[in-house]
Image (cartoon, rainbow, N blue to C red; front, side):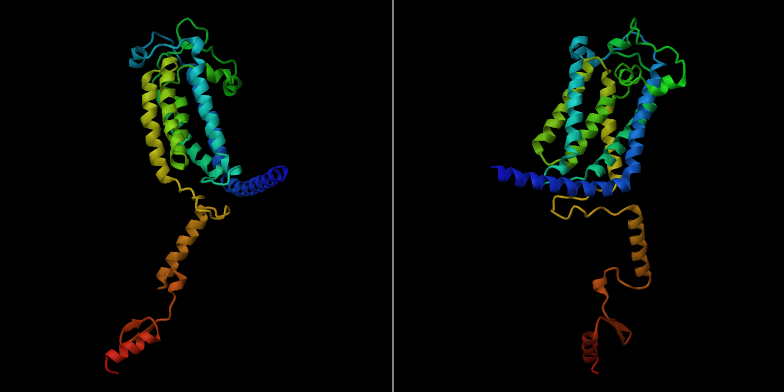
Length: 315
């Protein structure tokens, strides 16, 4: 038993080391995209903090979801946050499974580049939307009479830049259309839908996304329109951006883990080389470089072709 555990631990360690080497190579080529995506998460938080200074509390708007779903109340408002935290942590851990499991389909660095691209595009649309029209917040701390419904003018720019994390994020007001929680949830679910391997988990993830939507409305953290707009906007964003991004290499075929996708420069140089060969009358495929001889105005493939043509012409 001890020998078996030691052997499996040795295999696991070698797998982790090999995967780490591969991911470091990818990180060197793609760190700028990851850093830009992470920086924009701060910019998104800063924009949400800024709109809180513009928030004007008022009576709740008429909402179909509020009419159909019973209100959870302040004591049970944590339920939706708990579900979202589970979704976030589950997806985060899944993206690192190539370091542990033998069967793998994704590269961690490349999948996060893709996820951050989806998040940034969706968040840009979200910022434009909630700055265009500020609705009175339905959450308890955003209603009239609450001390957190309005923010006093900041004493310095530093106070705005710090964004009072995490309290400023959890108790924000005004950044309603559309739901940030649903942006993350749907991006994670759509990504696993494409690159995940467990059918049951895919179906369960969609069920969790629906439950998360209902909990957000029942907790009165968003209006129903905020959730509905998130559902079709995020799906459309992922659909169109996914077509523009290069496809991830498939690792399920058992190929070498160091078989990495070509960079943009490599693709451009390869395309130019192929065009140059075509202009010179050469085939792109080196295996097609056969000797050609011209006979009676016809280009023959080899000497055997010349004899056949001569025999047909009576020579």
